[in-house]
Length: 367
Image (cartoon, rainbow, N blue to C red; front, side, top):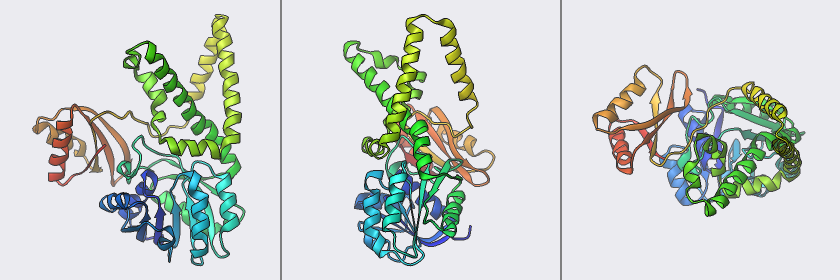
C-alpha cells in the first residue's frame, strides 16, 4: 500500500496503540512510526514491530509528526493533548482511541492550535490480554471504527484518518460525539458493569458455597468474559461517561425489577415473552468477530492465507507429540493472512510449541 502519512506518533503502545502500529508497519501506511511509553513497553513494541523507535517524552515524539494517535486511558487523554498541542506542526492531525468522546473532543478543540485538526476515534475492538503483549496486527479486521469529528475537524483530516482505519481492516462510521457516548454506554459500558456485578456476586457466594465457581460453565463464562478488562481503564470510562451510564443503570434496574416481578408472580406468559423478545433482538444483531475465552496455556500464530496453512500448523505440532486442545481463527485478512489461537494442555507443550514454530519460521507469541 502507499503511505498515508510520513510520520505517525503513537502515544501509548499498549493493546490498541501497539496493534495499530503493527498494522501500519506491516502494510506500509507510514514511513516512520514513533512510539511513546515506558522503556520496557517500548522495547517490547520495537521487538513486535509495532514502532520503528520510541521515547518516553510525548513532547519530543510529536515533533514533525503528520498524525499523532493518543492511545492512552481516557482519564489522561485530555492532559496529553494539552501538553503536545503547542508543539504540533502546521497540518498535523491528532486522533485518539478512547471509549468516550464528548469531553475529549471539547477539550481538544479548545487547545488545538490553528492549522491543526483533531478527529476523535474509537475502534470497537479489544482483547482480554492487555498491553503490548496482546497486540495483534489483525486486531482491527472487520471491527467498527467510529470517528467523531468535532465542529473544527476539517473534512480532509477526517478523510485521512478514515483512510488509515479502513487500510488496517476496519469498517468506518461517523457519529456525533454525544450520540456516540450514549450508544457505547448501552452496548459497551453497561455490559462491562453488569459482567463485573455478576462476577462479584458469584465471588461473594463462593465464600459460603465452596466450589461454586468450579460450576461456572460456558454461559457464565461468555457473559462475564469482559470483566477481565483493565480495572483502571474501566474506572476512567465510568467517570468520563458518568451521566450516560447512570441513565442506563436506572433503565437496566427497571428492567431487572420487571423481571423480578414476573418471577415472583410465576408469570409464565410474560417471562416467555421477555425471553422471546430478547432472543429475536439478539439474533437480528449484525454479525461481528466472535470473542473467545482465555485458556491457561495459549499461543497465537500468524499464518498466511493459503490452502493448507492450518493443516500444516497442526501437523507440525502433532509430529512433535503436542496435542491441540482448542483452535480458533481470531482474525483474518483475505488474501494476506490471519491470527490463530491455539490452546494447549500444559506449560511444557506451550514452550515446546513456541520453539518448534519459531524454528520453522512461523510468527508465534505466548498469551
